[in-house]
Image 1 (cartoon, one colour):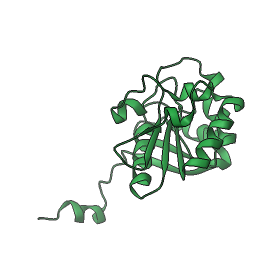
Image 2 (cartoon, rainbow, N blue to C red; image 1 turned 90 degrees about the vertical axis):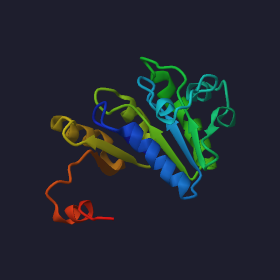
Image 3 (cartoon, rainbow, N blue to C red; image 1 turned 60 degrees about the vertical axis):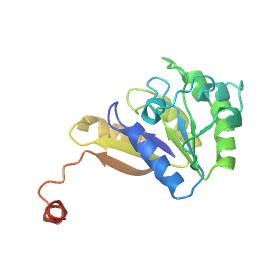
Length: 184
């Protein structure tokens, strides 16, 4: 599953980490892969540095998945992170590199979560979409430029499994006021 957003700063990395963590906690063998080479966020979010073995080493054939993947906190959660930010990751997202990586990950893990660059203005998502089963679009309430939503959804197209709306205000709902006013 690919996780993206229309633009930067909308919470796609945090959503990716949280979803992968929840799937692993539910007992699913899960691998979280950082494919956002321009702004890798998995390593800082988890507080784990990928200094020796990054996903780029696997994509170039210099390392295997088993040499590069890291298990997190003794859980069923494994991570392939980016070790160095790149301005032009096109070579890593080609079908020649990506197809073997995804085939191996699918054979090993129940869930593979790909945290990737925003849809606009990068072409990364369009390059990777043919190789994934589905995608989640993360939108931040009050931040996402509304004019970017429709084009982003169009790019993702039939691969869209759902939309996650972050920071959506709950004010005004008597249902939620009930929970907010409970006394211990």
